[in-house]
Image 1 (cartoon, rainbow over the protein chains, first blue to last red):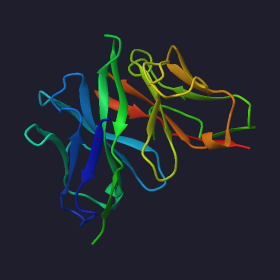
Image 2: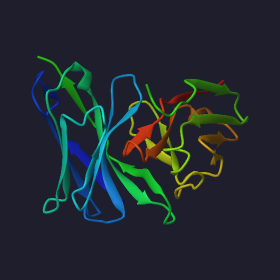
Image 3: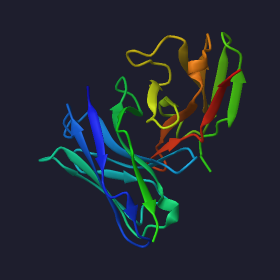
Image 4: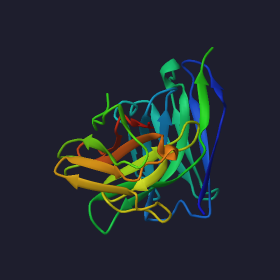
Length: 126
Length: 110
């Protein structure tokens, strides 16, 4: 059973950088079948995809966040990381990491997120 | 505002069937696979359907998915009060090179 666990500060000041880590167990982040994603959910709102990364280091980002975001992998620790800069109150959310299957049946992109972490709440406030 | 459009809410009686729609475009639903997620309050989303109509192991066959053109549909039969949750569709957008989620649909079992 694949397990993902997010960690990071629960409180970040406006204009600073939000930095989160996701530790993965029982799968390797070098597994070529999967992307590793960050998804957030603002209080009372829906799911918002933040970005994802493939083991070869290629990352994709939400266009609305692209100028402020960086996602990386640490294969030695089997972890992925999220850095989101210049945060505002609008970045207050529950942040999830998740595993996403790249392709289904050898066809077009699948991106079905089959395992999720429990989420970590980040509040942006002074 | 989500690029994938879902109704904000649907409702039906126990034992009945409900469908939830998800409308997109040619660069997402039209040419890529759709997945569906169930989320209960305070918990992480759970994958219900992937590749348009496939169920992961452990998901009952009361849940089904279909796709036609640039729209997808989640069907739930034999509704139970335990199905009350938020449901989200998702698809990759090849133009944006981004994952899209629908705005979510809250299901009430009356």
